[in-house]
Image (cartoon, rainbow, N blue to C red; front, side, top):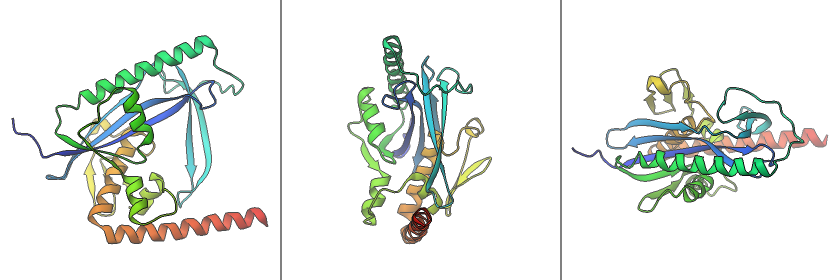
Length: 254
């Protein structure tokens, strides 16, 4: 069987705090991967949500039109029933039995991650790409996922270094720069469009693991194949972002 050209795996994990730890103990809730074949410019999707008997607190940022965080939403649920919201008791603290359950759930998720990545071993992957790689790489290490032999990329760090930025820029903000859009059957940016298989259409969206992996792919393609327009977009975005911050500062001190 003829192998494909070497693939890049764009990888994202979503995390939540275990309820009762004040976000001090985090657990992965899902993993998403977009496999990109640069020779054919085609993609494949893979993902898994983790289902273990543990309650978690999930924070979701709310951003404005320039990608600045303006609010956050907190939701409590059990990983075995992600669609069911539980009462939010902020005084609750994990006891010894809860700590035991948490350790068991984390070990179970690590086993799931290891099995998920091993299932991709038959793919001809040579590069693992992340956006702010620290948490994913630490999780791979704890889950005993061997990343040796792969080229490891961090798009957030690459962009900051390329343009000598003062601080890291979020994936939400980079999505604005590239004109990210999500349609029923495709993900798109200014210059690229990729079809979404029907079985993934309901979960490919921002702040879902596969959705963020897809956004990373598009950011990477725009960054490397349309560098002049991408840099102009980054610089323009930063001007608007800093102007918004200054306006808010002035309003707060008025």
